[in-house]
Structures are given as C-alpha cells and as structure tokens.
Image 1: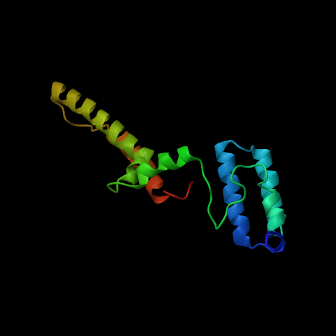
Image 2: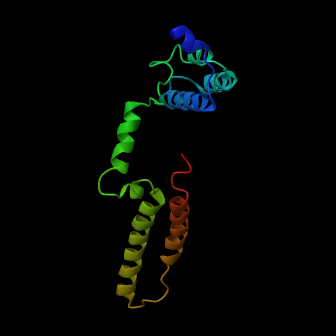
Length: 148
C-alpha cells in the first residue's frame, strides 16, 4: 500500500496543507527562509505523494497526515487563552484598543487634574490622542484575523 500511496497524484489541497506545515516549521525555526522558499517551490512542483513526502524527510513528524498541521506547542498554548473563556479574546488581540484605554485614561486624568487646579475646564486636549488611537483601533478591529 505504501508503494501505491507514493504513486498517487496529489491535489492542490494536499499542496496547501504541506505549505502550511512548512510555514509552521519556519515559524518554529526548524528551517530558514531560503529552505522554506526551496521546499515551497518543490511542493508546488510535486505531482505525487512520494515527491511531497521527500520535502518533509528531515522534519519531525514528517508530512502532515489527514490535513493536520502540526504547530509548536508553545504557540498553541499562547493562542489558547485569547480564544477561549469569557469571549473577550478580541481585546487581547487588539493592542491599539488597550493603548486607547490606557493613554486616553492617563491623558484625561492629567487634563482633569490641571483643570480642577486652574478652575478652567475648557480645551479638552486629550481628544487628539484619543482620536488617533480610536482610528488605529478601528482599523485593527476591521482587519482582525486578516494580518496573520
């Protein structure tokens, strides 16, 4: 059966899964960018399972089986808390939102302290950093998940 498996032609989905696995190997530091380029080119040129299997001979786990892409354990652990739990994972995935709350809060407190001490509550200058960070937050929320 192994011989038959090796002679079978592969699909575009098989190539895509192989390239996802190569990307995971690149992210883990198992291969460098030049190797990634060479192996990706070979994956696109591969016509049979045997040719595609050769690309993964020196990588742990070999070629992905049944569509599974093996990623680094540390990467899986770091992504897990942001996607599970109480549904606020998007806050952790949007750094501009955290900056908006932090910088906006600090600037507003500084403005408030100065206004109370001077008695003049005009010219709410924190609006400028708040507006800039609001635009950045909006862009990140709109594009969330597309930059990965």
